[in-house]
Image (tube, rainbow, N blue to C red; front, top):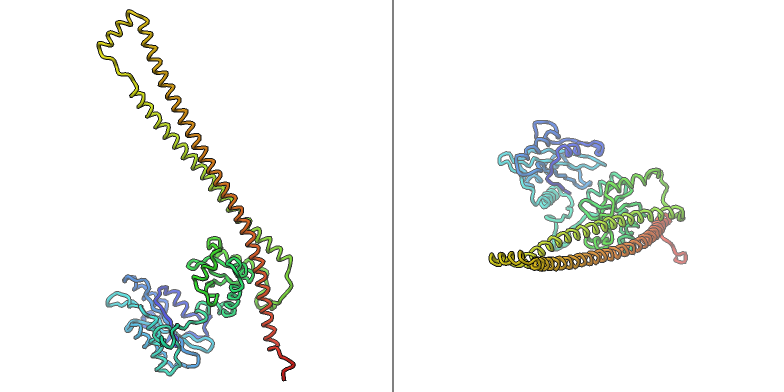
Length: 475
């Protein structure tokens, strides 16, 4: 007996899912504790009550799925709902029970209203996984069903130190239902490509050769888009690898350089145009390599690489231009500040070097002397002119030193910037050349991996058709 469930909102989506007849052979509402008589209206009202609380998930949706070997009676279904309700602490809450039948198997969905009307709070959903397993264990014991191991309440931690895990998740099972692709075979294929790849870029190229597109996910670093456009967690498709190990292995690949899920799906659609459908497509065989397709693939890869490198060059050129503009602006601002400080300093010195004004008696005596002697006036004016000329010459010398110092500083800063930018350009060109060579080598390695994988697959198919090899000498 497997029980899954969680709190949720979305009453419209949930009611639509529970009443779908296209994916179920039979749908029957076994119980609805609501005066509305409609699942959608009942769920809508139950969810609306959550607005009066501090929570947002006003519904609890659970799925009770017994083993196909056991046929459940109506009384047993009712008992299963009662026990699960007790374990979850949802006694007295309005509920709905819907029976689904598909492929001669039955399971039920139960939806409860979480809002307690008396307290206007949401019934707690903490430790709900343990509650599911306690209910499952009680039901298995009461109905005589074979126990199904669980991760929490149903596990003997001494006899079973590691929790059980399913080979595929519910989401992967739903994807297999939509696409008809066996998730286990796909996981074996991707694991084989991973183990045969030496680096992250080689693995990426091998995935592309196998029809997948590596993309950046919203919550995960990397996701896969399969040929059907389905989104897969990359880590879950590789057996025996941890998230930490995968991140280290894929360290050479930047997530921002990968397409988004929408872009990858668009590329899958474009790739699929004109190709045979799965019903009419011939079984893959180890066909000879099409040199023309290989050349086209390499040319497209080179074009993509060069386009990305050209964009990097443009970004660098723009950044270098901005750095030059910023340096010139800073130099101009520094020069204006230096000239302003120079002018203030010269004014201060001129004030300090100005001779003191003569007293009243001295001014009178000087006036009398210059009135009597023209030579005395000319001598005074000559002394004043010499002092002014000396001050002007000193200011000009200081200004020339200031200007020459600023010019030397600016020229040195600009030369250093040009040298650094030239080195960055050379480094970028060298990095791009290495990147192009590595990408082409990874692509060649991916094709080799794909060929080896196809050869192994064909050998396996041959062995399955013909049976194990026999030694004619054996009797």
